[in-house]
Length: 156
Ligand SMILES: [Zn+2]
Image (cartoon, rainbow, N blue to C red):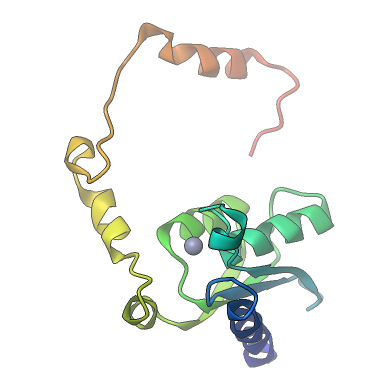
């Protein structure tokens, strides 16, 4: 019912962000009561942080506010279709659903083209524009061994 209202808030954050040295992206997260618990704006260039996308910023703030690492009863509203990084973060945060206004084609027309990252995912690791090399050291099992045996772990 209020979906358009929340999505417009995300768009407003995106618009305001441009005149504040940020990229044209904004996001809000609401809890199941409909309260805004996280807001995010793209701060990549201003903060020298390539992960400071609006969705990531909103997820961080919402998790901080709720003191949790899972947002499974929350909804994300974002001014633009999430990029692959944010898509991954949305799944890790286990948000209940996502609403977005602009699609990736509209973003690409303004120079924000993330389609190539989606293309990279399907490529063989060593054929990617940033090559990924598998070095299967025998020590590779150690982190999982200690994790499996750790009795005080918090699973997620
Ligand atoms: Zn993103």
